[in-house]
Image (cartoon, rainbow, N blue to C red; front, side):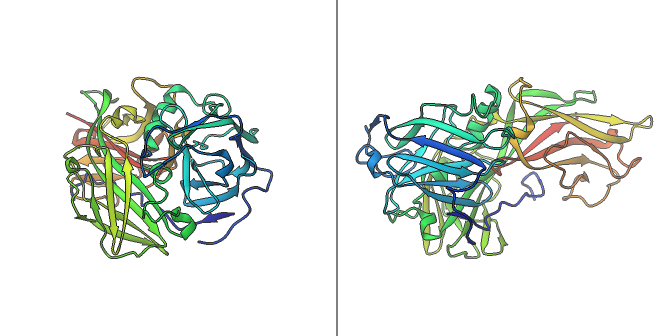
Length: 415
């Protein structure tokens, strides 16, 4: 069964912090198929606590695996049977999917994990001729299920740089495969028609123009702050949610700063946090009274080094007015990255400075806002030529939403 929820993440106006319907049988159809078998794999256990949750007390028994459940970034999910240790399920190209395995009673047995820290299948840039992803033989250790065939290096043809970026970017989304029973009642949440997602909104400093018209990257982006976003459906949706994290996170029954509804779902966000500059790893609790959900987030303190970095170039006319802004993408000094593999939502350009403004802007200090641009945009022509002097600009923001619906805001300073 394939189901779509109303879960959504708001693409925020990128201020710098200041201010279920039913579907089709997932085993049918002629689209992209995900296949694998537990038969012939090795299954071991060494710990009593699975990363991100409780259990397992024993190794996975292939005979106990009855269901494969997939979580799509866009809010959909599917359930398909695992028969005699094997599965063949149709998946949706164009967005990542997280995969878990369950017993006949809906109990969580384990989750699919790939190399490079990827705990999801990045299906965002799939070749049109690909009709099958074969994971080969699945083995497991402490409930972490690994394939004998890594689909990212062959079938999905991701570069090493893209695998590095995505392996970090999926950390917030993959909390749902690490913790699919976040309410702790022994049944996977979606099987009780409860849906939720975690996302991050982070700000980084990406470089400086240093007197020229092309920004010089600062090496690894320098983190400047973050918000945690939480979207839920099928749960009580009070006016305020509370967030509690590891002590260093500064979240301690902290009330959400805003709530926005999308039909039967709602989005909550923490306040903007500057210290620490990125979320620490550990256990987080989100309370939607009277319900409390618990999940583990991988440490994000070094995540900025893995970000895709837009590097802007400004085009000015003979009088010094900004005509156009273009940009390229890099990661850690490498350019072997397809934006399509990483950027899944809109892109946005904003200018901060003094003097006349052009069109609606996001708040004090902003003098230009492009509004939402397509995910594949690599340039933007200003809508009001002859208005914004380059000499009046002090900062250029380029922001994007990645394929996991995290929002990344990159600032380039103009001394």
